[in-house]
Image (cartoon, rainbow, N blue to C red; front, top):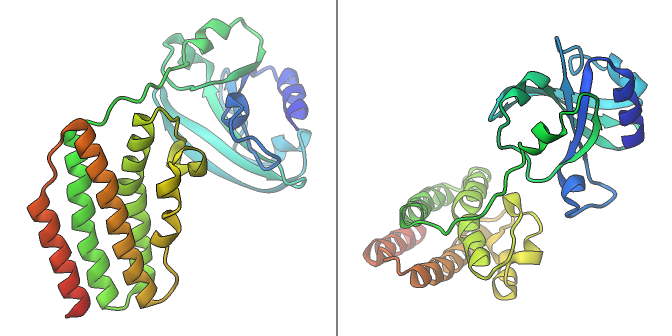
Length: 267
C-alpha cells in the first residue's frame, strides 16, 4: 500500500513532497493493524481529500471520512481512509508554503519523496519533546479537580445513572489519574505513550495489577467498588508525587470529600 501511495505521488505534479509520520516512522508499537500516516505536501489549490475519486489510483475504498486538523502552521485538511484490503491510511494535506516558516510538529518522520529539495525545511519541523517535571500548579489542579469530579460520580450513582457515571469516570481516568501515572513513570525514567497507550510497558507492576479494579461492570455495586478502588489508587500515586516533589496535599479537603462520598453512598 505504501508503494502504491508513493507511485501515485510521483505521478502528481501538485505533490511536491511526501512524508510518513506516526508509529511506522517512530517504529514504536508497529503491528499488522498499524495505520499509515501520510503527509501530502502540495502546491496550488488542494484537489485531493474531497472525494474518493482520486483514491482509485491507490486502492479500492471501503469507507472514508474527512476532517480538519489544527496545526502550529494553520488548519490542515485530512482524509481518513479504510481500503477494501483493511489497511487504514490517514492522509493530511499540507500547503508547501507552510515550509517558508518551519514549525514544530513532528516527533519523528521519514521523507518518502522530495521533488524540490525541501528536506532541510521539513527536518526543521522535527521537535524534541522533553517531558518537564510536573509543576505544583498543575499537580494542585489535578488533585483538586479529581476530588471535585468524584462528587458527580457519587451523586449520579445514587440516582442509578450508570451510563452517565461511566462517561464521567472515563474523563477522570484520562484527565486526572493518567497524568499522575505518567509522571510517576517519568520519575522512574520510563517513556510513556499518548493517551495511556502501551501502559503495560511503562507502568510499574504494582499499580498495573490494580488497574482492572477501577473499571466497573454495569451494576451499582460494581461501580461503587470501582470508585473506591480508583480513590485508593489516586491517593497512592498523588502521595508518591507530593512526597517526591515536596508538594503539600490538601489533607483536610481530601478527608472531607471521602466523608461526603460515604454519606452520599449510605444516605
